[in-house]
Length: 291
Ligand SMILES: Cc1cc2nc3c(=O)[nH]c(=O)nc-3n(C[C@H](O)[C@H](O)[C@H](O)COP(=O)(O)OP(=O)(O)OC[C@H]3O[C@@H](n4cnc5c(N)ncnc54)[C@H](O)[C@@H]3O)c2cc1C
Image (cartoon, rainbow, N blue to C red; front, side, top):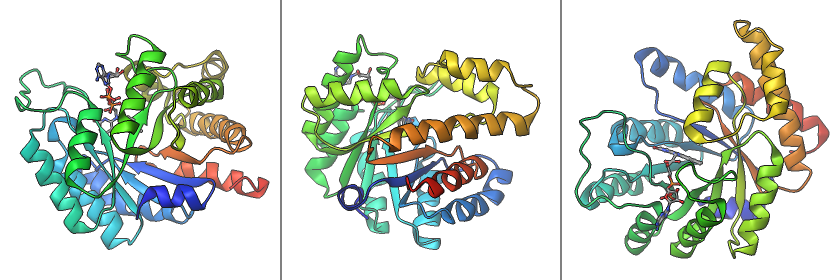
């Protein structure tokens, strides 16, 4: 499945992102999570890749499980950080043999392990990865975009210059980092278009799952917890798991409505390998005819 064909044919395209399960318990429930989410009829699933090759086998097995065993259209990710050219080729050859047609290419971040030593020839940026892959494979390629600017970028404008480079090197669609104010996304798309980025820019949606996780991810990813969201978070008992989940669902439904009303190419859900929130958000969007 080539994702770009979906974005050409259909609007909005619904995609759901998973990471390879990290524990035996998570592995045991993972298939059920995917099955439940598949009932919402997403257009494709996507499987992340741990930087430094940390989930190399797990990512492959997860792609295989979703794409082959469950017969669902699937995009495989590759994060180049620390991988040498031969290792990139090894990963991609396996995906190609499996029948994967779309690869989402990211740089990844330095693993937390202080002793981690990357390959001396690993490629510094995602644009270098895209160039490397494009020369050798016929995959459709996607890349990441950051409506609030990437956390290391000197400015949003500079970050968009590098996004343009990724597209010029061969990325055919962009999925964004999540954000909690649609204004970030609309402003970003406007600036990207002005900079000549003319491929689909798909908003990433991260519902609040737990308050602790939201705060932690916001620090790592640089996605602002807006005043509107903070007020809602402060009004709920953080230990009331159901209330927190419902807050996240309500907030995401409003956000998705605002995005869909402007004709976004799709919605990309960061499921965090959990079924309930994304299922409920989609269920509540359907009656409005927005999906
Ligand atoms: C949709 C999505 C999915 C993700 N999936 C994963 C995943 O599966 N695994 C994972 O480990 N991480 C994942 N990430 C996180 C990602 O790896 C990190 O955000 C990482 O820090 C940047 O990756 P990138 O591909 O955007 O990097 P790049 O595009 O290489 O950019 C990294 C930084 O370098 C700057 N830059 C880019 N090119 C140049 C240049 N030529 N010269 C100087 N500076 C430059 C950019 O402005 C930016 O600040 C994902 C992020 C998103 C948004």
